[in-house]
Every structure is written in C-alpha cells, then in structure tokens.
Image (tube, rainbow, N blue to C red):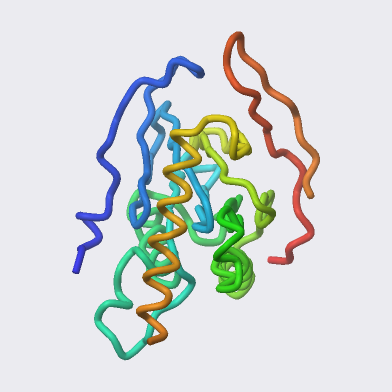
Amino acid sequence: MPSRLDARATRHYFDSAFHCPAVKVLPNEYYVAAGEDIMISTVLGSCVAACIRDPRAGVGGMNHFMLPEGDGDSPSSATMRYGAFAMEVLINELLKAGAARERLEAKVFGGGAVLSAMQQMNIGERNARFVLNYLNTEGIPVLAQDLGDVHARRIGYFPRDGRVMVRRLAPHHHKAEVLIAQREQVAAQTASAKAHTPPQIERFSAPARPRFERFTRPSTATS
C-alpha cells in the first residue's frame, strides 16, 4: 500500500510552452507547492484532478484520483487511487505547507467518458459528482470546473497565482496524450470492476503550440 510520501509526484521537467519548471502528476499521485514558481501538469480521462490553494499563503497543489470511494472496510481504500483518500491527503499536505483551511479554494477537472465502449460504468460521472460533493461538504468553494463530456484533458496548474490552463484532446490529435488518458481510464474501470466484484474561458495561444483555455469565472457551486 503506497504511503503519502510515496504518492508525491517526482517527475520534474522544464515546460517549453510556458517556459517554466513543471512537475507531472500521474494517476494516484499529488503535488503541493509553497511559493514555488512551478506548473503542475497532468493528463485526465475518466480520472479527476482537484487543484486546491490558499491564495493568501501562496500554497497550492493538485491530486489525480481514479475512483470516488473504495470499500471502507478494506485497507486498499486508503490509497491515492480513491478520491476520498486523495482529497484528504491533498488537503492535509496543504495545511502542513502553511495553508489555512478556511481560505482554501478549488478548481476541478476531468471525469470524461473517453472510451465510448466502456461508458456504462459511468466512472467519469461518478468521479465528477464525488469531488463536487466532497468539496461542498468540506466548505471549500469551487471557483471553476471542467468536468464530464467525452474529452481527455491536459491540465497545467500554476499554484502560486491559481491559473489553470486546460487543453481538450480530440481523439485524432495529440495521440500520445490521448493514449495515456485512455490507458488511465481502462485502469480505473478495471479497478472499479475489482472493487465491486460551463465557465467563461479566456483563450491562450502560443506559437506552434496547441490552444489552451484559461478558466476564470466562479462556478455556481456553493461553499
């Protein structure tokens, strides 16, 4: 069973599109930055990523979970695969880094039905519903969301100022990233089977790079 330390993302790189240091968060991982000028990135299919920050402290982070909740009686439920545990870990790590719980705010992404042949399990929809319900219960306002639909998504989160850049990936474009998201969705659906057996957008463009979208409008989710 992975520990919280094991689940912290470690894949650092330099992002040539945004000209900044970055860290890649894979499924079942998280990353928290305190005052760092860094981008946190991930690719999502049916999985969901919650981007949470304390704007006053400049502390923010992202997780990436595959399923909403596991069997509470099973030790395997206490892993980053499950949203209930992944949200707890991310929030606790933010507080350890200096965030105040009453100032936390969130932006949430993912939950796409990327593979049409396997939509009957509704994993993306369940993940999206879970994260919104969780944040509402915890009193953390959702400032922006891009959930559901049939797209894989590439997310770039800047925790120091709260920007999130989203690129929706069409199946016939960006094949490597879509393949990652599809593999992630298959893994989530396999795990689920075992366990049970629109905001306003500011467009961003860079030369010779795919278009991103910046989410800025507060959602109607209640705190």
